[in-house]
Image (cartoon, rainbow, N blue to C red; front, side, top):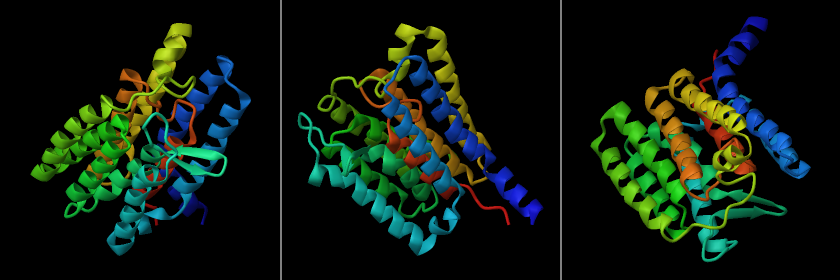
Length: 274
């Protein structure tokens, strides 16, 4: 029994580190720079919830009919902001759950990438539907995350359809970028750029933690290569836009959506040791 529990923990250790290291590094940076305590509390609560999602026996939901139903649910989440708001200067990227506001793309796209990578017959139309939601919001960061996830799947499988999706995603990103940039949110958007102005070493440490999370997702997860590269590609896309423009920085910045989204995705992508 002890050996089985130890094996299950060891199997999930790369995923736990991929999620926990950048989130904890981001919380430490926020604390050092005087962020409101509520920001730290939000990220801490999201990390606890993300770890719970990661440790649950979720891989059973990642294949067959259950996986496709979950894909439909995640796709519907991407369209909720366009239908129900809230709206800010013509931009609708968020889901309101009482006092909590979550970025729809960061919540849904990581798991959508893992599920799409495991279902090659439907991956291309699923990604194209998600890109449509990104155009409607508009959300260049989510479009870029899907673009690099498609690049990752194409690199692993050489599926020409995912190459077409990657090209479409790049142009969707450009179209969304010219319509959807908002003012920067302190501690949430472009945190590497914000923090570099205050403390270059702190920003470098945060960057290293994010690169570490990316490498763990791409190389160390005990799961098939297309899913690993899709998940890492989505993190790369979100992160690049979080440097280039006023978009949230995943995991290292303030906000629960990315932490929950990657917790769910890592839970789906990590095969349980039996």
